[in-house]
Image (cartoon, rainbow, N blue to C red; front, side, top):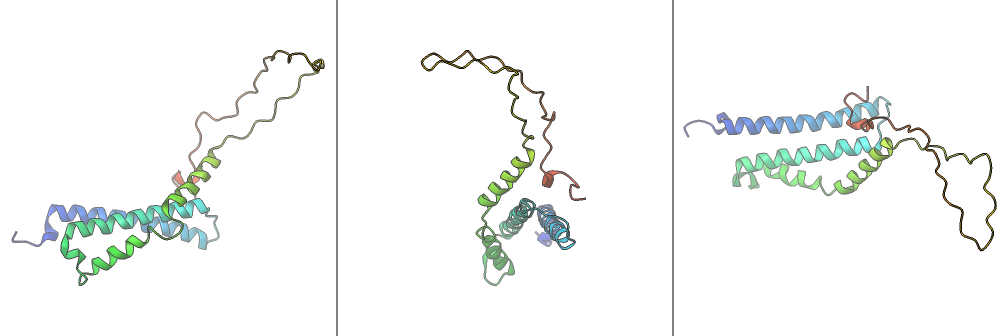
Length: 165
């Protein structure tokens, strides 16, 4: 080629993507740990979400770098080979991603659940007692209480921008 590969558009774009992935992962983790160190509440779902996204970004970044370099990246003499092996282990540490996502989803659904409405009040007059061998009385329509559900459910806290501030 006559010039260093790092000057090609392909390598510049890949370096930009790797930087974006790693910077985002770092900021997610630093935000959660800084809030924790300052005594601000950090839920388990928030911590798991930060860890899950950071793991995904780290794996994607190192995989992209490995693919970009090709076979030389897998040589034991190349430091990238060690990073590639190390980052793969992030996916198998407990709790694994499927368990973490289930916990995050459970928390998100619980946060988005509408407040339970009180049970309907019984009518003023009680229905007459039913004789033992007769059919049940007809079902009377009951007016529903007004809906307390907001027009749009709010997003879970960890999905809202600047929710921790």
